[in-house]
Length: 164
Image (tube, rainbow, N blue to C red; front, side, top):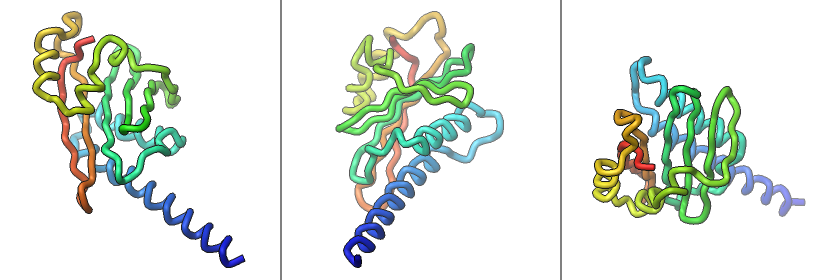
């Protein structure tokens, strides 16, 4: 009986720690913003909903987490990918509904996720300046790299014009 109780307590602590880690990461990705930047504010809530619905259970504190996010203004849809070295989650979010996607269209046409995973910002910026989507030249996407070398969460960010 004691073994079962200890197992339950250990499982609860591990789940709580994982929850606290992603929540802390998501809050750090949500800087103090003015009300004007509704896309970033809503991106925070999208990531929170995706996590709460259990899609990101593969994330641990030991992993480097990568985020690629895009927002389509005409359809009011958030698109993105969240991944670690072991697993990827591609999503679309619109009207309060998270849809899992097979493959992100950005990755289908080029190796952007590979460049982000290597954090090759020089190549990303070069590709974005040469091969950007000329129909929407002011459109930008964001990518983040999050890691925790010891007890501090480090976040790197790059924004660029999509080149797909």
